[in-house]
Length: 134
Ligand code: CO
Image (cartoon, rainbow, N blue to C red; front, top):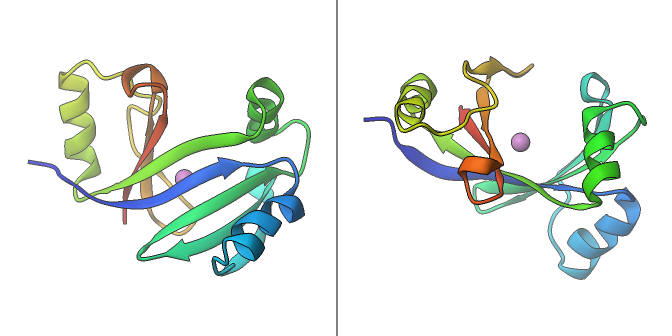
């Protein structure tokens, strides 16, 4: 039986990285582990690890990226929550069986080799959910 094993990260879309870091890093005092450009996604991402999980801040670096379109439509805010699973193929099969609406029917592979897939907010109570098999 495929299982959810952890919260991997929570992603927040921001329109101003420095302003956002003045809250997450400077006011809350969380550690900024890495701030990096992701040219493939036309975005800049900040990683703030915490207790085995991570808060990720994502800012578009181009107007034609998926994340820029999201920002234009909905404004800054919560983007998705990512759950680790021990068997992503098994989990996707189980969700399909339960008529959960998936964005990715098949897992995709990230540059770092992780397998991931998104679940449509319509089936989750309004939150985009990402599944990760590390
Ligand atoms: Co994510």
